[in-house]
Length: 420
Image (cartoon, rainbow, N blue to C red; front, side, top):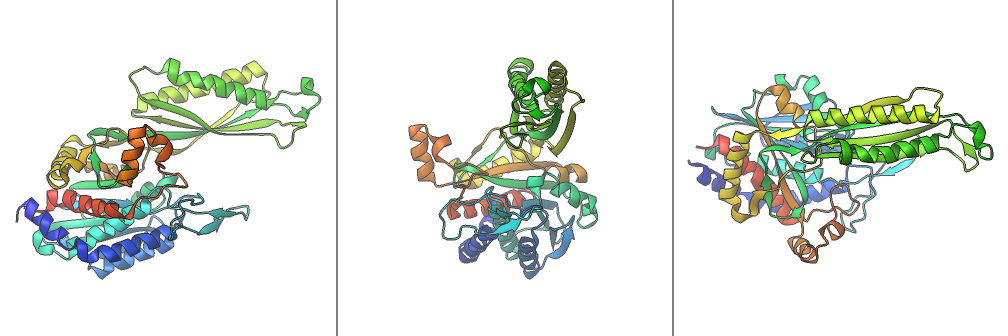
């Protein structure tokens, strides 16, 4: 059976499973879980994989799940879906909106939401598994479904690798992942080379000398010191990075003081850096350290600053040959709805898995926004204002055609290796 016939044969079962998949998606959306806490989601996924004859491994790296669907000789394809939600209070107004909460270390109640669309990823992958398992005469080889925890914490993939992932599955010939994005639903986009930026966060603690608010002459004010650092950091990208390079340096958090009439003795800044190359990332890190130390010296800080890197995401750089093959398959099936989304500034830890396994990969995006809403906003030039993006309290992919597209994309990409 040739590739196109195989795709048609596998996807012929999609209408029959549509109601089940939509219910599954709504259930997942209503029950988000934070990274490394995805026990319910992992249980739902494992049960569904077993139902369709996959060999299932649970608890991989904590809450990770791996399902292996063996179907005779042939290539091995791995498809990953991330499972975790975010500490965001949902504001979509949907009838299946999340009301879930958790409790933080201080005992405070924290609202939860699937604000990044990982519920779409899980539902799409499980739907693709159901279709592939139900049409095994159309293809041959092995399909691996990998449900990954804690993508938002930047360590879910590495924990699965460290837990011996390579011993649980045959070595893949290729690995895939996808992400729902703020593009029109029904569209799918690939891009050769760097697709998602690498990222690193840096926590900076600077020290002053505390005093009464009425006696600033006796203090080294860390608020002023931190403010000067923030201002100076704005020149790193604009004056130190070559104009043709992509770089982002954001000060996302600054904490100093507890009361208006107290000058504190320290301040904490948290920075986020993004780039498409390690060289640019390292250049920014060097500039951050130079500026922080220089401003501390200029302010007469009594102690050296502390700089701590965390939440490091690798570069997601799509293999050209794999991406071209998937792109061709997408164009054949989706027609004009298949496009090149270009580089995205977000970051992911997916590439940790194929890099550790030594296999090429590609990562693509699917649209999740109501096409009419997106078109109207585009005509007004207000897409960034009117279309909620990932991590927004209002981010709510339309159920269809988002799920159909996400499911079909997995099947089409997989069968580019497993059919014919």
